[in-house]
Image (cartoon, rainbow, N blue to C red):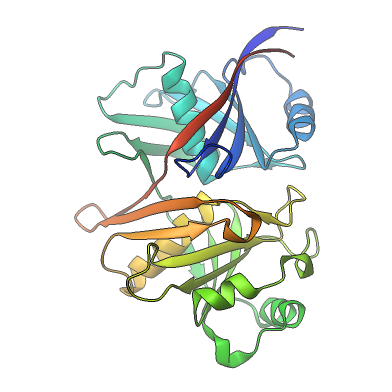
Length: 280
């Protein structure tokens, strides 16, 4: 057993315990795949990350991301939480105000220049949502065609089956117990709040491989949706998305688009709740 620095934090919220929890093993060097997967299953959080020295020369650190069941190439709240933990443990980026994280999809930039840290959304493949998947989701949730505005299958590492509903109320009314992993995986719902609301949209991610009824706040899903929406021209301005409402969370995702660089930025705050060491 080796003593390793460890933190547990809450991402995409300014209120501790109201975001998406993340375990970060800061000293992740030397652990086998089996050990990392086993520890992630033990924490029983949506994701657990392990930080290590980068293999890419331009990167500041490398991260590996595990759910209790599998490794992920990329995920949003582990990106922001891991970056915050790396900085808190004394990490210093090679380029001022930009952290370069190496992960399964390559190098992801995290912008530290603003009030809220934000990662650059990876490129996203947009395709039609296959009819059989759409029909299965509609049947499980009892959705009717008149409440569905748009659908797409999005891929930015994970693959998402996304359905845009007529309103945020429709999103909040969906019964998450009807969409369970592994029959379903990565079902994203989005709907607009009324004009003048605190948040512009409500998002939910059902069919989480973590075994939870739904993911509290999903940065990678929001990133894929933002790429889709800004890319189609439907979104033009900065937006705030709420997630986790149905399970008592206060997730807030800040989204903006830099048209000059064709970059979508996904921002969120991180709160630290536990800091210490573990033996692994």
